Image (cartoon, rainbow, N blue to C red; front, side):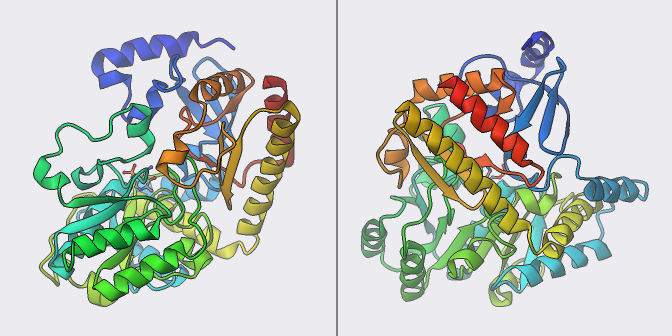
Length: 425
Ligand code: PMP
């Protein structure tokens, strides 16, 4: 494949945008080479500026669960745009999507919309601190909750890719209120509570981690977190930015049957437009401004374009009783195919998968937390990434990312992908 135009565009973007990109992991820094500039996308495929076609396993890092340029979503956006794109007033649309989301997700009465997953997590933490009148939070190494200051501490994903444990610019004062725990290690969490009695406002967790590759929670881990929180008057926050409306209509709360006090959303809930949200029981959510004292706001929050895209997406997901079964089957098929290839070629590997989230680590040891996620053979991953790319298979350009499967993928696409992986090895 030729990447002439992408290379030229990267030279030009690098002159006026730091690193040439508006979000670091796009830059291919972890895998080397020049990022590919995408011109358009449809269904399961991406088309770049040089005319190359790819099967897409990133899917905008999650939102495109029904495929790119999904017609009902595009039509809804197009029609709505003609009527104005932002008013800064309430609209009926916001109530419609809020009511639908509340009906789909267990244990939430009210939801507030923001513009990104970062904003959702940042606001949920502020609300938890205001509500509990405590300052510290527990976060897990390798979990990513967006780029707000409190979370940029051992934050997995992009930060691990770049080898930056904590970002400069985050003050010591902020960092000291974030207590780091080890994913899947309940004793470690209990020790933090013992050492910080009555000081912890919230535990925030990705109920299935997706930012150190895919790492599922061990059996009972989420239940035990729930218990620790309830015993200590601490709020349990599920960051379902990846898992929400992807693992099930009701997300990880539904799949694992564990109730969180606050839930954060992003990605799928916006149908590909910039949307995030956080939600919970009325007694907590009513602590937000203008009813309560915790301030949170946004000029473009709930804007009609974003809301209509999200609404159409949720409607489609809600109406399709087979969607999550299809996604599970397609991803399981891909997993089986990759396993067979890697076993036959004797490449050391671990595959983790929950529903339509899957990742391949090039190491045989189980991947259960951030430390074990680092065991993967990065050089092998780099080669794997580039060789697949040459064959028209686009996986995330970092070993710490999860692949997101879209319903637009056909079994022919999956067979082709498995065949390419075989050829690569
Ligand atoms: N939480 C999780 C679990 C995420 O994966 C991400 C983004 N990948 C975020 C929060 C932040 O979302 P955004 O990039 O929309 O700010």
